[in-house]
Every structure is written in C-alpha cells, then in structure tokens.
Length: 143
Image (cartoon, rainbow, N blue to C red; front, side, top):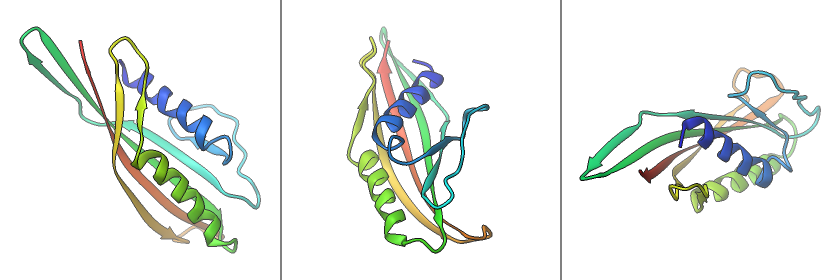
C-alpha cells in the first residue's frame, strides 16, 4: 500500500464523516475549487507521510507507514467559540477512538493515536479564530 493510497483513504473517510458538514480544503491537493465561507467554519486538512520502517522476520515483511494528520479549524473571530469547539470535538472523537479499516488484500488498518488540540486563537489572522488538531496514524501490514 502506497502513501498516496493511504492519504486518499483518509481523505475519503474525512469527506464522508466530517467534510460533508464542514467545507474542507485539502492541503495536499494542488488544484481544487474551494471557496471559504463568509460567516462559517471551514477546515484545512493536511496529511503527510512520516519516516517508514520495514522489518523482515523470516519470510514475512512488516511495513510500518506513519502518517501525520493536521486539521486546522477556522471560524469567524466573533462567532460563538462553542461552534468551533463542537467541530474540534467531532474531529477528536473521530480519530481518537477509531481505527480506519482500509479493506485491501493486506488487511491494512490505520490506527490513529495521540490526538492533541492547540488553541491558536486569533494569532496574526485578523477576524479569524483558529484551533489546530494533530494526530498521527500508524499503518502496518504484512507482505
């Protein structure tokens, strides 16, 4: 399983569970039609590969492919902060307690772990409030 396939699977899962409700800009796509909502919450999703590890034991080879997922939640500065926090909880719960079954021939499962939330606030962005959610995923399969 290649990183591109894993990223596509995570994006597909995101689109059906969170992206269907909240507009999402996918950071790892070059060309996409995305219009930030004027008075609503939107999310920038970045999925990146980390250093992989291959372990051979006998005639079996295990592949560990770590992935980093960063969701940046943006909301208008003067909107209810509870609305942004509800999105953060939705993202946190989706990835803190769930494994993503890929359904391929290798029986690949993506295990999300270590979800962290950072309240960035308004920072240098005028009129926008930002909360970041970071998690890593471990992808293991045998060939």
